[in-house]
Image (cartoon, rainbow, N blue to C red; front, side):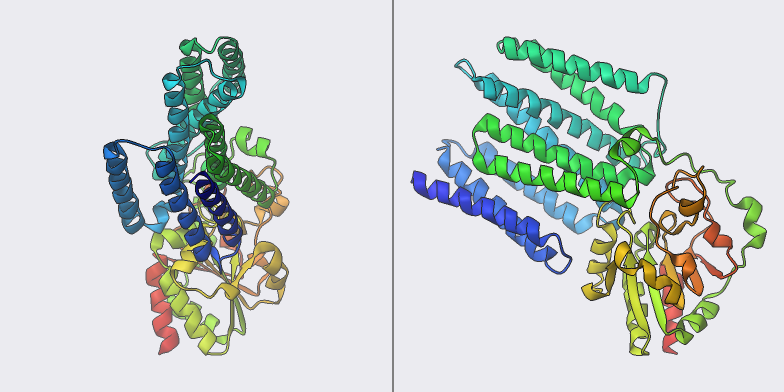
Length: 456
């Protein structure tokens, strides 16, 4: 029986690794999800059988309630709210790890070993920090909290003092593991530190925060695996932690910032309603008829989707437009910026929902040089990722961030509700360029109108 359980855990670990590998490409992402789900199912079933549980009442109740919540969330949550849901799930994963470690400690009857003591401390600290930090991220994304950076005097000093207090409490607990008050102090410190860690981070940096918190939830799970002596939990948690750190690095590289800049830079200030008002007279409002004529006469078009596309739920209309243009013999491609949207991979998931062919999706580095030879750059709901200020304005919070070279195209068509800036709070000079055609209104309505004109 022990051999069967060991082999089942090994199979689960292999499926986790293979699933993660498949998630690296949009073409294989769905299969990757399937492998990961199968791995989790095997791990849960084997763990329940291995522990020789006498009463399954609470376990079955938890499975039913949790499954119901998961199904409802999958069915009801809109793509625009996907980042909030991911942030919430990251927090719940971290919280579960922390409280499982705490529960195991209180159930210990013998003197715990040093490695178990250290694992409990780490799991509790990272898990609690992830829980409260993710809840703050959820509140910012959902609009329940102020999305702009919140910083007060001595903010970083307080963070340093709290972290120092955690180290001291951790040492006290390691020396005297019977003193549970030190462990509760760690729980309180980590919870406060999680809030203070996320509140100074603005909306422009939310993709980085989400991937970092995802990594933290994995590290908390791995630490809890050591507490429980569960190898599959250690492996799966380590995989999530490592992949989250890699993704965080990719996000930082895409924004040309260090992780310290993201955490301590307070990028993403208050959006002013006055931004752009002084320049509104220079913006010519074009109609869908004008845009459809330009699109139909073009030979090559690059579409740049952004968070506004998700808000308008215009991905299906955009796919229909692209399909119509391709049928007319026009080259159509999608340019995906790594931090477009509000979480890593947001645009890829959004376009996959509309069944956009994967071979039409191109990353920034693969397509940026092609804009100068492109007839039309069609921007749908994107803002900061096409802002030329990132190249030239050293005072801009976007300065140095690699952007999509939409302004290099012969004509730029922008579908947007208004001239309001993006998450960074910075006005976009591209709106006022002579080669830019601004189509104001709901992106879904505007694109549907253009599709009808193109088909006429």
